[in-house]
Amino acid sequence: MPRPKLYHTKLEQQQANRNKSLKHYHKNRDTINTSRCKAYEAEQTAAQLQREEARQDRRAKIELRQRQQAQKHNEAMSPNRTQLLSQLEEYYTCRLQQMRKPPSMWFDTIYHKYVSETTATGVPSGKLDRVILRLGVTVARIDRLEGKIYQEGGISPEFKKAEVMARTMRSYLQWAEEMQFALHNCVVFMPTHHRLTLYPGDIEAEARPSQPETSRVSSQAGQGTQSHPVHGFASSLLAAIPRPSSVPPQSSLPSSMPDPPPYTSTSVSSTRGEVTVFYGFNRCPSPQELLEKWPLGQRDAGYVVSRGTRLGFFAHWSIVVALTNGVSGHYQKKFEHFDEALQEYSQVHAGTSLAYPSPEILSRPSALTRPNRLFSYADPQLQNRDLEFEIDTHQNIRVYAGPRDAPSTVNRVAVQATQEDGHSRDHLGTGALRRQEPIDISDVESEDED
Image (cartoon, rainbow, N blue to C red; front, side, top):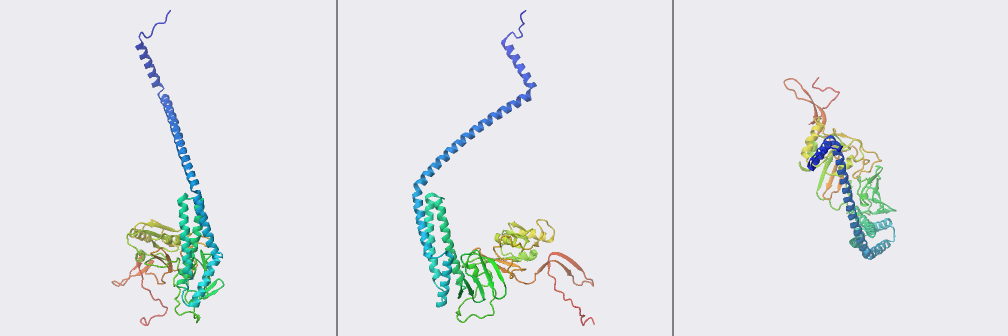
């Protein structure tokens, strides 16, 4: 028996298939959507990878073309660089041969010639001026050849070799200039086998320009031997000069000999110009003291050191590093405006704010830490003293010991009030209070009480 027809027309069959598909979709909607999302993501990932590969291929071709062009340029300019480098090496070698000695011995010879000529004539010798002039001409020519090598091929092996030679000659010129400045106001008249005696003051200092990093200065007045980090040979003649001894100068010395500089110098400069002094307290200062010692304006920026070997407000980062480097538990903070920072410090000092730890003097760092660039903790003139950091217009920093006067304020005092209405009142204050007048206490009774 033939099977009866379910759909008599093609339109009815299409409608039935559509209904069947909708029923299947609604029944398995989540699975179908998930599979479609996965297929779409796979297509997008494949397209992204294809685009990235094409981009990398283009970049590789561009870089290869640039390398080929640079190689061709270097090959074309290589003879010029090689020729310039050979000229520079020949000139550099010729200058070293003219010294006839290693640099350290050459500087010692120049130094002793300067001393002998100055002693014989009584006027400063022009030996160092001539040496500085020759070294200046040498450095200028080497710099010119170094610039040409850089123009030919940029930072190339030839340029690096030229840079080393130029740096060496610049260091020789710097040594000569520092030696000239050190001897300008502190002439040496008694050379004795790489040691020299300065007058007045009976100071002995090693004249070794081959070791410009540190110098050892010793005093015959019984102050022992101390090592001071200094900058260059010249600072060895200016570092930590004690007071003159009782031994009078020899009669052969000229009467116009000026005294050595009476300050501890940490850098060498021909002029000092205007100076700015920042104060480092060896105690917890009051806000009023900080306001009095601040040399800049109320809206200037700087740093506050509330925990370190010295406390205070400073506007130079080198001072902050010198007071906190290697110190356990130190605290320093940068501020934009001094008046706001002072108000915050006042609250911390009074104990009403926890913006940062309360001020405290910490012990100095151990000897194993990096040396202090500004001063030495072993210097007896600076131990247990307030410090004054003087900065000139050339950004040179000099360190002095502060005055020994008693502070005008104290951190915690008890004040006896005056008699009012027959009663006496005691007040306990904290923070920055007025200084209490000294009270004389004696075991002997006064005559008025008798």
